[in-house]
Length: 220
Image (cartoon, rainbow, N blue to C red; front, side, top):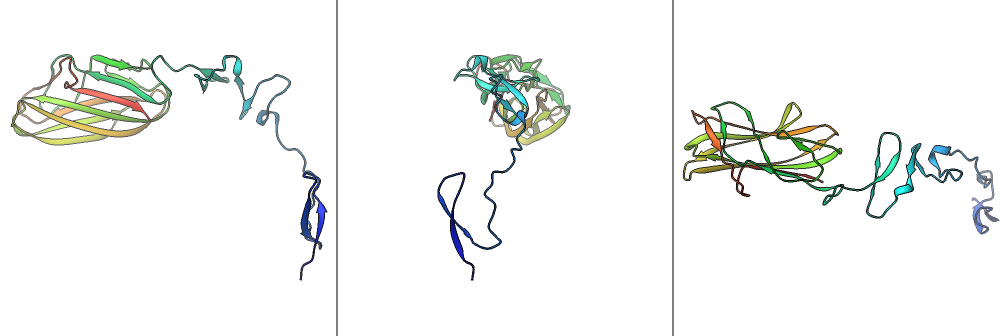
């Protein structure tokens, strides 16, 4: 049967119950193994994370930390925006003709909002890495009945989400929608492409209205 005894723990100053045989663990302090890059640099009054200095000269509760390539700094989100949240809502201001059975980039030309100036030439280019949700709705004008319509989300050079529907022909406008989530690195791009098999060119509806063909991107 094991026996125990009480000793004073040199770290806490309190009694501690330990085995009284050879299994007693040494209570001597261990050698310090931290490196300067893992602890606070008191001499220079600069914190470090994984060896990168934090420039706290602009510290503020409304700012967030980011890595600028050399050090970690406090930065201010773009006006009206945040690190996560809304990024872009764009739409067509006029009709765009889509040729028959030809994949065509949708040329969104009006920005309702573009929080971080990431939408140029009908292409969204991420300025921050992370997960983004992408929503789009295309309105085909008078495609007729039972015609194949499609909407696709293109990331860089690859289509990552496609939606296909048959037109109903009951109204002049047939809409098709899609939603997806994608992880984007800095510099990755997102575009919306349209295609159909109506037999002739068909217009995408575009007017200065929330009901026009549109795309919304949010960072989550």
